[in-house]
Image (cartoon, rainbow, N blue to C red; front, side, top):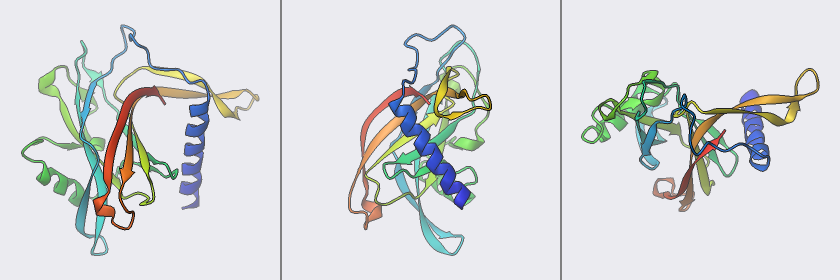
Length: 213
């Protein structure tokens, strides 16, 4: 547990430092060998799963991401998604998500998304064209009820990259450690509602942008 907390703290610290530092922005016009898939998404919503592990109901949050490859080639797809609260809680989309959570989401959306997949189980290739679009469920365990805003970072939607100097860490030679950045979709939400009534939390979409992270 200590290593997880420490790792989360370092990740949040790095994010803050990089926010203040001069970080490259995604290219307005990509190079000929670079690509970015089209991404559409639903806003986060809760789902309560009954009988989870100890027999108690547990709340999860999820969104559905639809990705379409409109480039001129089939592309490699290795997605990664994180949720960061304004209370500095960093949560990775659940890789070992219990099957019951995903199955309940699939049943809820079977008419709109009949071929829904879990993000982490998606094929590592996205073929060209609308007919090969993927609908992907991104799921997180419940997060800090006192959070008033969240940021969602979705990576793997582009092969555009950049390398910068770490604002704090040094390598063995005393030089700034190099940090590898990927073009990432950032979604920002404010959260309204009484923390005591978690199911009534209201997400207000603020904006989206592409960043290097």
